[in-house]
Image (cartoon, rainbow, N blue to C red):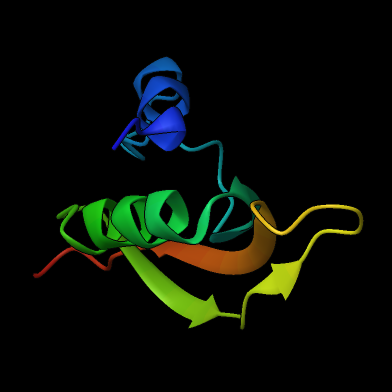
Amino acid sequence: MNHTALSAAHMVDISLRDPGGGEMIKVRLQGTKEDMDWLEKQLKSCSQVKITESSDMYQNKGTNKYFRKYLEISKKKEKQ
């Protein structure tokens, strides 16, 4: 399987050490079902972020191959 999401993930630093004060970001994923499932699994294993919401997959118009879904991602609270 060719992970198109993998190429995009390498271009984005998902470390939230200095996020600029925000608590949550909304992300739109677009790709094959397999690639989006793979990326969501990778994000769930990240120790610094938490997926707080994950939408259903929606089929893009004009294609049976590509879909989209939406995530809300928050930084995990540091243990004190």
